[in-house]
Image (tube, rainbow, N blue to C red; front, side):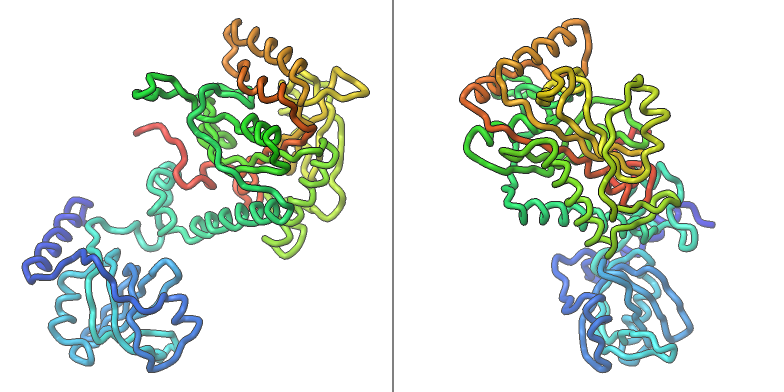
Length: 447
């Protein structure tokens, strides 16, 4: 078997052959008239079209060559016949200079092969992009997990289920966005360079702006900006965007991840639980056509009302090890100690607890939400507690933000906030166990 360098050298020689014949192997323009999906769906035998795509397989039989090509919308078959109607010169050039992996343009007429397969009979052929490296081996594809994540473009090319997973991810995000918009929320665009890393207890990433000679932080959360907008007269706001937390990497954590965060004036934790349940049922029903789906050999059923239980009086480790994994069906956990979140409102009947909930499905925490604190005096006291932790060396804190406190002092309506981890939700709905499987280009340690 030829080595990678030998294959690359052979393809470079083919590139030089094309250039020597005055053929541009990388033309700026394609003359494609239809996508593969369009001609497959609206097939008309005898219709003349120009198609394009990457050569995925070749089957040569003397004076005829069949090959499959993929343009991103699907595969289609092409037939080259030497001298009829493709010229002998073009046929021979294809044999000498074209390879699996090349992008080509085919002009010709549609017909059904003897095997009743939709096919284009080429009368003209053009190189669109000459590939210099071979695609992963036909039958085994790209199997090494680490290599799949590093070279996602080969992963999606070789493993159709991976490409389909990211198409599903796009559908999930679109459904969430549509649900929020239908409920009257305004989508907003918030800064990713922030003077303070606030809104969550997490270690941030730090960067520096040269012209201002000022340090900035990448967002660990956006809820403070969202709540400032409520103080500024907005009623319902949300953002779907990147968050960055300087934490460890494992199967459920990536330093760069996607969050939905929303805030709604005059809402509380109870109404936000109802909103969250409706949202999840909307997404699942529109994605699967029903309220049940499979995850890790378990049937998750969203049809019944979601269970509600108090946060257990156990250690954090005991909760993570024993309680959380047992929560398979949708369960809201409520009534957390005040120390768990510096921005959640205290419960009126028990000020030692906060009016917060999390949604757990299949043992995974997907949603964090609460009635937002809008008392600036209480907020300042909570900030002071966070600052004390920071002074003792704790890194995962939310430091005092005087600009946010000032905004609160102008008056902030009671409101409910929701945070949803998009990556974990996609993991759940596409039945995978590693967060890297749902992030196109996950954070990886260099080789």
